[in-house]
Structures are given as C-alpha cells and as structure tokens.
Image 1 (tube, rainbow, N blue to C red):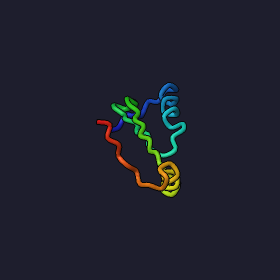
Image 2 (spheres, helix red, strand yellow):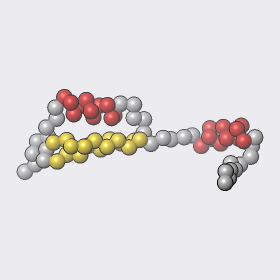
Image 3 (cartoon, rainbow, N blue to C red):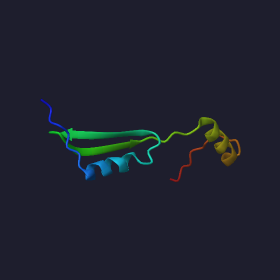
Image 4 (cartoon, helix red, strand yellow):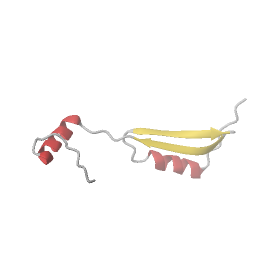
Length: 71
C-alpha cells in the first residue's frame, strides 16, 4: 500500500516558488517513500513568429540572417 505523502510548509513554499512566474512549462515533483525529494522546473519560451520576422527585418535591413566567421 502506498504511503501518504508528507508535505511540510517548507516543501509547499519550495513548490510555490517554482510555479511562481512560470508562463509556459512544467514542474515535476519526485516522491520517494511518501516524501518529496526533488523538484524539477522546465521553462519554455515562446515567440510570435510574425513579430520575430518583422523585428529581424528591421535589424537586418530586410536581409536574411547571415553567419559571421570570427576565425
């Protein structure tokens, strides 16, 4: 039978800190023997393709992105 999960105030605050401000992503909580042992936060950044294209054209004078060789 599974053990009940033990969550004290410290772990609740840690979890809330990881979730706070997360716009796109996930928070993974790992449990061992009914106790929280790890919190993983994966954050994604999403960019609007139309806005990115418009911004890159204004910075590049309409040219496509060019690689620069510093060697």
